[in-house]
Length: 342
Image 1 (cartoon, rainbow, N blue to C red):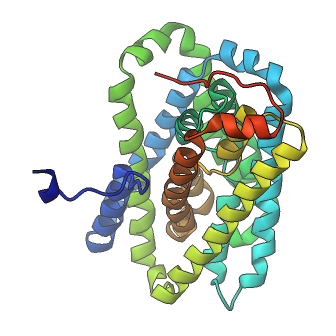
Image 2: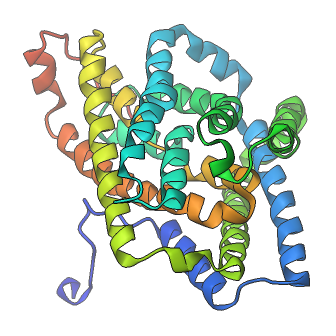
Image 3: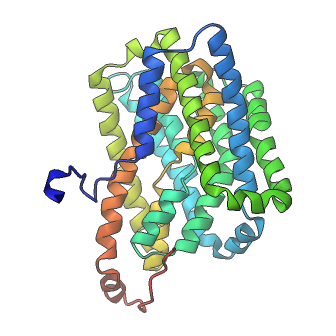
């Protein structure tokens, strides 16, 4: 009987991948890699990150990206939300140190604000809310590409030595481990694109497995270095509160700011969901390259924010889907059929 089955509310999504990430953190806490095992794990993690960004490059359709440039105002608005508004709010969070956040947690909080937007969840929530799905696809893709360049540069400028020693060498590592594989994937897409499309599901597991390896390596280093003694339940609670405020501000700014700029309802939905999110898939590999031994604390705020944004945006998307025409009438807009994806 259904009454015997324990189910989570549909508006409260718990991403199974987050559970896998938590399990990986627990594994690293109980059985951290050290010595030779740490060297092997580190080498495997480096290779996994390079392969991950190779797949990103091979999947991105250059023709679709160029076609999406026609809606440049929307994409520019999302980029401003992601790489201007978010970082400014992150810098404002400096006032929380040391009373609310430790310097190490603040570095992770600021890094979270520099990460590009996510693609999959932005598309999914835009579709649920009956917004402009093609715009969400292009906006998320552009943000991911821009993040390859802007995130390391912003991290070097805003985090400095707090990020584990940013230098020309760190930027070179970004180029070798992230940019070169991405470009190689783009160049080879003509020949391997069909294979990747046919095996999309299997390669999706490779994606996620690669990120789990990155998380295990980063948290193992943190355990060996003893940095987790610096994090208390009170600090974690304060971090969650700070991230809740950050998400609320960006949701409001992206929604009402887009309205002020004259975008219609469908575009505003795409802007809100693409402009208020941060990508765990892009942020974790970048953190492992940029932060080194400090990566475990650096990615903690991003992991928490990722689950929070899923839960909150799921509620917003479903509420907006109930009567999407009402707001169009209220704004004097012409009703249109909602855009959906299969």
